[in-house]
Length: 158
Image 1 (cartoon, rainbow, N blue to C red):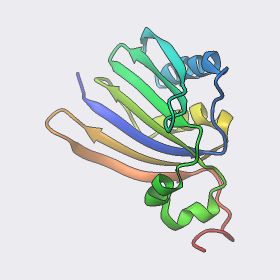
Image 2: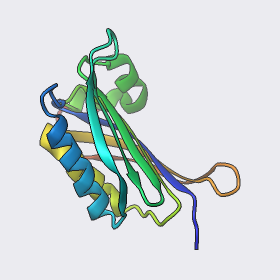
Image 3: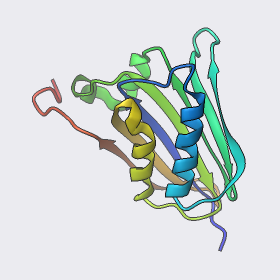
Image 4: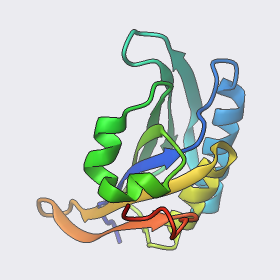
């Protein structure tokens, strides 16, 4: 049965992929596809973007049921992070902003978020804001939440 599910992810890590790490990121995309039980149909492609204000790695991979795409910025985006994470920013060490999109006509579940964390862990995963939507008939929000890797309770909500 066809579904139309999409994860939108905004994540924070301590570090970001460097310009020479395209191959590593392509491997990360392949691993993510395998871990969520999808099938690759278009090879992964990660490229470092050097455009002023948009410096960072961007990449995508085609899956049998659609795609996974990401962009991560080299520069700190404190305003965007503060809008999402608010007072929790004082407890998060990371400052690298990731935006991800995982769309499929197959199945997704909240357990797939663990695999997305694994994709981000080499860069010091800190936090994730996720939104799972059903796009079959419009945009129906199925689930939304935050996941934190480790939070120093002495810093939180200062």
